Structure formats: C-alpha cells, structure tokens
Length: 203
Image (cartoon, rainbow, N blue to C red; front, side):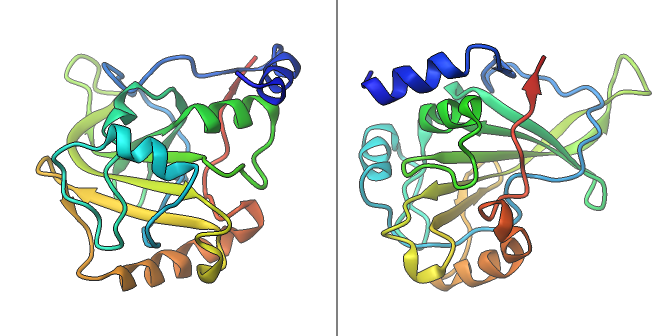
C-alpha cells in the first residue's frame, strides 16, 4: 500500500462503511429511494481500471463497448443499499478497493480514477418469514461504472458504463451507443459526479 493510501485510511479511522461483501447478503426493509446507477454506456477502460478487469474477467461476454465483466465483484464491500419504489426493485451497491478507500475518506466528488462501482439489482419481494419486511427476489441485472477521466472524457462524465441482465448475464445494448441513454439519465446528478448513490456510513 502506498503512502497516500495509508494516509487516507488513517484519516478515515473514525468512519465505517457497511462492512460485509455481497456474498450471502439479505436486504431487510431499507427505505433508500435511489440506486447508484440508473443506466449504462461508455468505451473500453484503460489504466488503472483495465488492469483489474483483465485479472477478474471470466467467461461472461464483454459489453458492446468493450468493457469486461468484473467477476470478482461478489467479494467487494457494500457501499450502500437502494430501494427503487417505482420499479419495485432493491439493489446492493458495491465497490472495489479504490472505491472503498475513497468513500471512507469522503473523497467521492469526484471519485478517483480506478473506482469501480457495481449495482446489483433484484426484484422486490415480501419476506417469507416476516410479511412487513422487504427482501430480495429474482436477480434482474448487474451494472457497473468505471472511473477513468482521461479515457471517458468524450462522454463528459469521466465514467464508463456497462450492464449485464438476467442470470445468463447477457450484455445490454446492441452497440456502444447505448451509453447515450446512460449519460442522459445520469446528467441530472452530474453535481454528484454522475452518481445517484452516496455511500452509507455507519456511526
């Protein structure tokens, strides 16, 4: 770990994020209304994000814009949880190490290069054991944002977008132009570095 990372972690010792990974998580009635990502788009990521993608990609097909599926996302810490009321969906927002360090330091507007944030979405369902609790139903999609200000400067956001749908993880979009709908949607939160989500901090 470099000196900068150690300083960031030292400054953030009083702040804790939701300290568990996606594997085995169960949602229980969180009332947040916004997801981290609402759509997707972008172009092929370069350093530093690309190095991680090369080591974590598996057999899942690439997004039409060339972005590879980050297969290790299941081990990433949880940054926040969302409940989309209009679509009756719940989501777990996860982040890679760069994202977690930035969130703990409050360095999220803008997020640093190399940040990858994932939004893992499920259908909303009522808990089998407690009818007043909202839980996760069927898996809907996994979508990711990749921060690389230089590579994605042309789309104005500094982020690359990608989405995979269904349990088959089918890449979303017929061409790389699908990013246009993502930029249009996320533009309303450009003041929050193009993210609907803010990290959930624990006391």
